[in-house]
Structures are given as C-alpha cells and as structure tokens.
Image (cartoon, rainbow, N blue to C red; front, side):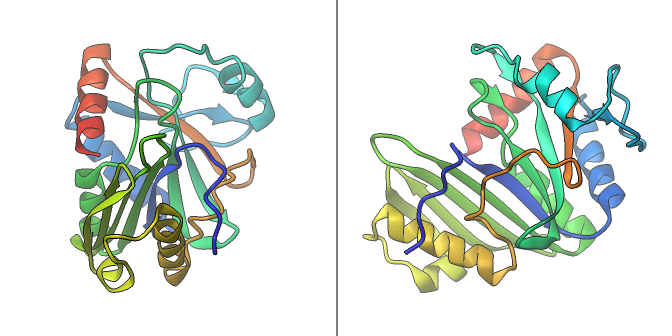
Length: 230
C-alpha cells in the first residue's frame, strides 16, 4: 500500500501543457480580474515577461537562503508559490505548488482557475489538496478535461463526502484514509502525474519561484475566498 506523503499539506494545480507562457498568461488574466499581478522572481539569468520582481538573486540557493529560510513564523498572509516543470514522474505536466502551511491565508487550489486553464488550453488539469488533521484528514482532488469536471473526490474529517468519475469506481464511502490516499496516488499514476512523490526539493533546473502582488485587502479577499471553497 502507498504511504502517506511526507510533505506537510501538499497543495497543487497540475496542467498538462508544454507551453509555460500560455499557462502563465491565463494565470495573469485570471488574477488581473481580482486586481492582482503575477510576478516571477529574477534568479540567475532567467528572464520572461513576468520576471519583474524588484530583487535579483544569483541562483536558487541564494533566493532560498534570503527569502524562504528567513521567513517569519507568524504571517497574516503570503502569496508565494513555485512552478515546476519536467519533474521526475510528471514530465508532461507543469505543476503549481502552494504552501498552505506558511500562513493562515495562502494561495491554494482554485476550482475556477483550474476550470479556466483547462477550458482555455483544451487540456487536462488536476487539483490536489491534502491536509492532515487529528480529527480526520481533509482531501480534495479534482480532474478537469477541456473545461469539464470529470473526476472529483472530497474527504473531510476522514469521511468521503463526494466521489465522481474515477473515484466513484475505485472507492467506497467507508474506506480508511490510507486506502483513500492509495487510490488518489493511483489516480495520479494513471495520468502520468506522480502525486505521491511530493518531496519538492529545491531544483534550479525545474523550479521557478513566483508570487502575487497587489493591495493587501485585495490579496486577503482572494485568499479568503479560495480558503472557504476548499
């Protein structure tokens, strides 16, 4: 049986697409409607239309040391995330990996954003969120195809609330969380997306740190809205 991911509270949106810019343009279009702007950190010689951060770092290690390892313990909100491409076991996907444990309000999976990406690019998008809680885990998985929601799993306090598509055929409502997670990982494998391998170590070749900027109230309103939908 598959083991539970060792990464605390993994949260990601994976897009099956080779074109970085096409995906980022959709992200920016979506966020701009909320008064927010997508920014990529300027690391080494990396460039691009969204690489507009005010600071520049010599390499990923320097960025991590200055920004990630000095992060204060208590923050009201944060919008940091990473874009990964060509990850082992998931080479067909671009993965937006979020850190929902860095603050009370953070970026996370977003049903409306996932649908927009899937529809705009006529491609597959998978959302995955897993949060360990003593009273019972919370797990959300959604699979989109050309803008249509085809697979969905919702677990709260260790109990299955909703399962459609793939999960309807592979789960029963009285399954234990370890069994549920094994099915979730198998779902990823069936889509050539390794959800179980959630050890997102720093890797300058595949990792692109990013964040959203905007007025604090607009940021908090957006982060609150996606938190309430999970």
